[in-house]
Picture 1 (cartoon, rainbow, N blue to C red):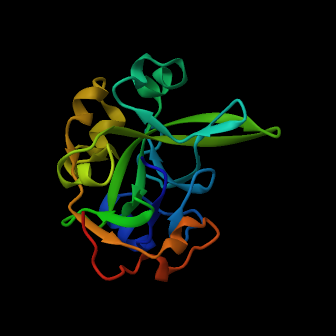
Picture 2: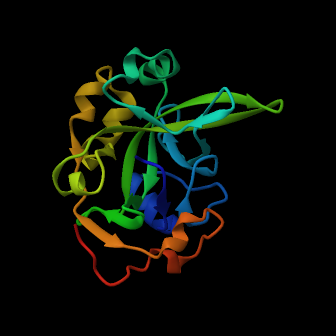
Picture 3: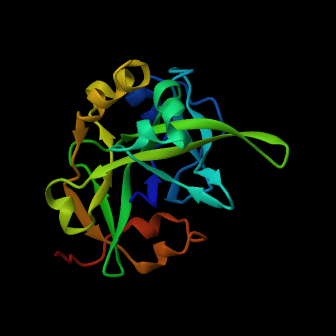
Length: 206
């Protein structure tokens, strides 16, 4: 975790929630997947939403998550943890349990921000901004669905995550997901990207 999430709020909602300008081309994404261009707020510009590609390229594969327990010690992530942090904007994420996808959200927070780190990469001669999402051990009911979860920042500490000199302290101030709703398995295909994908099926639980 995290391998899929969704960002469906409108431009005005994002601007109001995060106090930023959305002056880029923006459209909802109902099935956000690795290597897609998604939306972040980087620590280099706290007032503008920006696009960035999900995942750090590494020897022919894509690394999409960083374990918070070791990120500061790994060469791939250590500099970014110190100097290049971001908010990854979302409404929730998707996790699979025994082949069944679940829509996972936070009751009192329609718009959320995952703790992320970013870097610039040259791909085919062009410069791109790439990001990964920080994860930690699952807490609460999330343990029934996966052993890991994305670090979803407490809204009171989101901007502090971008500016702090003590990032690990901020990462201890996170939200735990509270709502788990089963979805149609069509969401497993990244080519599917419509609002219907996020409509819950009849309730299942574990």
